[in-house]
Amino acid sequence: MPFYISTATASLRVSFRAPTQNILRVFSFAFDVSFEVCKLSFLELFGIEVKCHKMAGDSLTDDADAATRTEITNIEECVSSCGEFGYYQKRMVAILFVFIMFCPFQTMSMAFIGANVPFFCLPPEYNSSRIPDGIKEETFLSTLHPPGDFCQVYNVSLNGTYYANVSGNETISACNHGKIFSKGYRSSVVSEFGLVCEKKWLKSTSKSVFFAGRLVGAIVFGQLADRFGRYPCFFIGSVLLSACGIINAFLPSFTVFMILYFFQGVWQIGSYFCAYTIAIELVPVKYRMPINFLVHISYAIGMMVFAGIAALITDWRQLEIAISAPFMFFIFCWRVIPESPRWLIARRKDAECKKLLKNIAKVNGVKYSVSDKCLEKLMPHEKLEKKTKTYTVVNLIQKWSLAKLSLNIWFNWLVNSMLYYGITLNAVNMAGNPYLNFVAMAAIEIPANAMCILTFKYFGRRFPICFYMVFGGINCLITNFLPQNPSWIPLLMALLGKFGSTAAYGGIYLVAAEVFPTLARNIGIGMSSMFSRIGGLLAPFILDFTTFIYWLPLSLFGTLSIIFGLLILFLPETSDTVLPQTMEDMEKISK
Image (cartoon, rainbow, N blue to C red):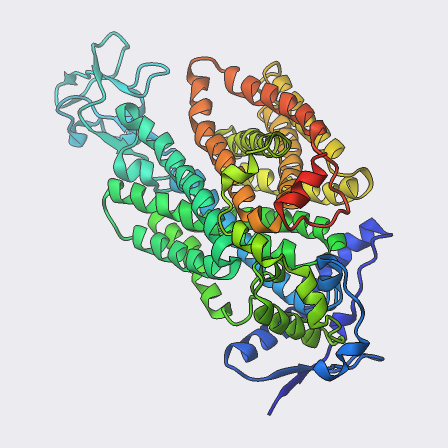
């Protein structure tokens, strides 16, 4: 017996004439349809036929009335004819938003899994029973460090049965007689594997290993998703990401931890970009911009949720399980999440595309109005289709008109990532509560992306991105000249810098999706992500320079942000344009 659902919620329409109301409506949609989403998704999962009540004036038609269908002239009209942002699109976007909300659990995990833990070097032949009565062990050990150097220890002498008080004139030894980590703090890979003093470089390396995995994953998954589809790559990446994280929580070797953490980066970025691409390619042009920034708002909400989870779970192994297990849920959505219709058209998979478009129209309760002839016209010619199978990153730079677009976008991703992750990862090491600092860094992304929905609507793409990058860069430079006390002053400037980098980062994501063609979109975005990962790889090491020249990291971040923000002005304006399908379309917008 078929199951019927009401499409009253699906009839919700979003007006772009009232931007503030539009933001609220799009946000409220998740609450309005959440019950129906779960119900419909699981009914489809178990093979129960799902039908929609027809909306007033609509009828679900078959091939018999193909002659009455509207002539479709481009891919945007094809997607829009199936219900624009109807119930089907809302359901898909809601599921993908939840997935993207989980993604920062992995991306930012090292902020707490690799958190600094206070430690104390032990003197030669240390015996805790010789500590004078009434003095706690950590209090006593804290007096044995020379001022400002926690990797050396005084050779404390005995005064009878107990250790004598330290005068500061004792000889000094290196920290190679053992260490004790504070028991009043959280556990992390730093405390478990002793990543301090001579092993401190391994902490920065462990952060960079994840970004190295994301770099490789961006290249590999970009190529795979454009060749074999977004759908299979999304599910493979999600399952392997969850599996690697859970396995990593039970293994005692730091070397194995690094290897699996690398692959977590591979699977995370691969599945993330497939989810992002499906969301962008599933909706018509007028919904593309708000969906892009709502994706990033969802990401920011995930960061705040992660900070709460990290505050509750202070053992790093238990935290690793908690942030990896949720990705396994999406394997149950394999019958719900679709392949991108644009990819199906670009790859001439007409039967699959027709079936998907009919299903979208059916769930949305609208007439399927795309004839086979119109669908055939939208697909590339067979000769062109054969040639597109060999598209690689080389095709994006083989002509100067294409190279100047690609390189500009890629290097802007690098600089934005360097600034974004540099500020965020440093938040837990700033003065004040590390959890509140992290939450503040995540929360600032919500108004940043909400502001982008308004500014990108009225001022296009280039000028807002340029403004936000220059704004973020100036704040980084100013921070070098401000007092570090009270602690809220550098935190405020860091938040302003994060505001600018977040807004610019979201914008450059959107521009990449709008510039690169469907046949090479995941390759182009994958290369963008590769450059972004280079920036993420460099950020932890650049931050380590504060030990030698405290003003160098922020000065470097700020200067590069200003320079590349100005270079954004050389990109074409892509606001309200049709997504390019082929390399020829990309060449046209570059002129």
